[in-house]
Image 1 (cartoon, rainbow, N blue to C red):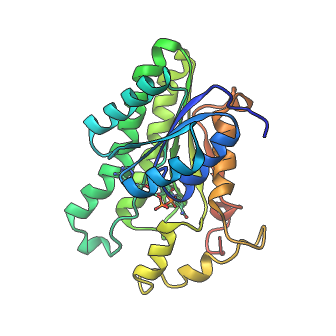
Image 2: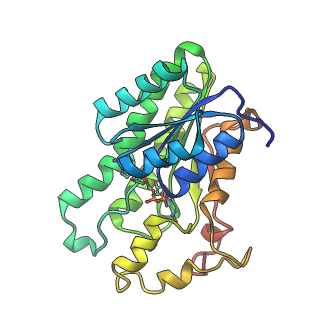
Amino acid sequence: MSGRMDGRVAIVTGGASGIGAASVRRFLDEGATVVIADVQEEPGRALAAELGERASYAHCDVSTEDSVAGLVDTAVERHGRLDVMFANAGIMGALGPIAKSRIEDVDATFAVNLRGVLLSMKHAARVMQPRRSGCILATSSPAGVMGGVGPHAYSAAKAGVIGLVQSVAAELRPHGIRVNAIIPGAILSAMTADLVAGDPGDLAGASTKLTSSPLVGRPGAPEDVAAAAAFLACDDAAFVTGSTFRIDAGYTCAPGESP
Ligand code: NAD
């Protein structure tokens, strides 16, 4: 591979599965050293063991400040610096009509998908600012820019991620730190598998939606998103900050059509 991330140290939250795991692999292929951060200890450790000495696992619950602070400190202790924070961990949360929303479910979704991203940005900025360099990525969703594609709290949190990215990008621009959002389209992963298997009655047609994109004739893959994350994380994207990068085969341009 091109080694566009040679010598860089990256954290990928939600790195044990799906888009996060594919990004871990891609960042390693590009030359980075990667800390896989996740609440899922067993797959996180197994992935790190499979990938060799430039990969390691750190347990982290992104919804808890002490846990995120500890994660960033661990990365710096292990590797001396932090260049890339990919705030990717997320949960789908509970589906259902707004009139039946349970505030515990709403809070749980916000805690991971929005507070978790803010905390990841906060603690990454803490160690990146003194070095006047760094890159922060955060995973949003089509649900953050359009309706009807996810639970209400999930949509609100993912829209919030875009607002947060723009706001933090503006603050950190003079400090040499880039901050960008990624919008993956419908990507085959544990999250979407659960969605289809969990309650197909709530999202009719979800399985067919995930079968094939009209652009490429196949479903979206975690590797499609990982390739974009690697671009944004390396110097090829040196002039890119505050952006919302859609890796969705045009899905958000064509509402109502299949992904
Ligand atoms: P996934 O379920 O395969 O991966 C999510 C990972 O996040 C899991 O490893 C999980 O253990 C981890 N995680 C959950 N809560 C956590 C917490 N509190 N702290 C740390 N880690 C935690 O799903 P995925 O599809 O790879 O999702 C990755 C991101 O992409 C999510 O933010 C998701 O909302 C977003 N996204 C996915 C799709 C899609 O179609 N798959 C589309 C748009 C956005």
